[in-house]
Image (cartoon, rainbow, N blue to C red; front, top):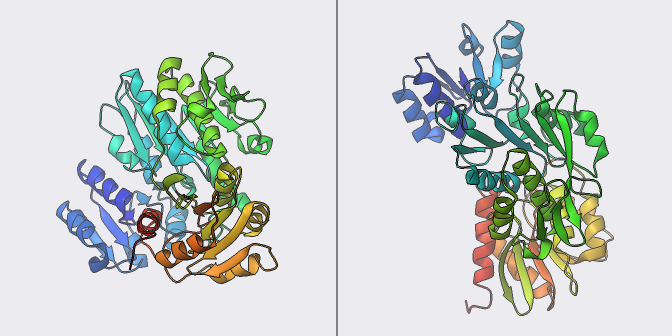
Length: 442
């Protein structure tokens, strides 16, 4: 059974049906909501059980593969109690992949680091797969040259994907950071962190556990035997020394001002990627070349334009408080202040760190979406101005009116997007369109 017919679920159906398995698909959504995915699954020979999770559908199964967006279900617990393996798409994929796996997780920065390592690894002239939570489902690497012994599989993994991993073994496992997130799903921050830490499962002395040097508490999450290597901070193997990103072991040196990605958090991401690439055998010249060429990913601290002396930055991917704070820290202008656009679907954490940071660096906050009232309470008594907006266009108009020359208008929502938008990408696109039309006559 495949539970959840999203992108990864459909990829599992294709994979298993192509190998002769009898597949049942179960999804809370009905056929109309699933659209083409339901049609394709049926054409592949899958039996569809849609619109709920009836107990009868979970009988006589030999394996259950759960998609990352599926919440905990009593039916899955009972199946496990009766000896039916319940695994994630990541776990299933790892059983069919012979290539070394490079796995990247963390609350923030995963996509940037995954992409950087992918670009650096392609200089090795070996087949490389880049995907996971970023783009293509990991199961699509199985049976390809990249998934064979001579290849390399590089995947971004979310906490949801790691929840049901037990046998997957990452040759290089990277934990970038952990800050409160997804507390609408997990009972505590500790449970969220434990899910992230499963990335180190099954590692041995020939494998590498990559951690930030300035977060000693994260080492306590590692119970396996991977060789711990550190990045960033004052003690990392790859860190910033006198304005230069330097690998103290290999001799790599790239001045930070030659990087095209913006913000101190992205410098830390670059350190992590450079360290991982060196562990994979990428030459210093190739690492340096990628670091100098990489322009960053869309909606991740992305410069949009300047209007009347005000810079507009799209960090729609900052979907939690920690990411929004990191975005502010990385972009705090030397002259002006931050006008923040925030809001969306609340994820259960505290907005206090955001309020504290904006009290020092901010001029104003413009909020929209479901979490607007929660943000208003968090900023009550703050010296920064506070405005409500009814749409993204309205938010940009408010922000432009509040900003002064030298300021930065930053979209860093600290919330997910699903109340008003299909994704963080659509939210960022709306922001960029609104910014591009600033100053035009109605």
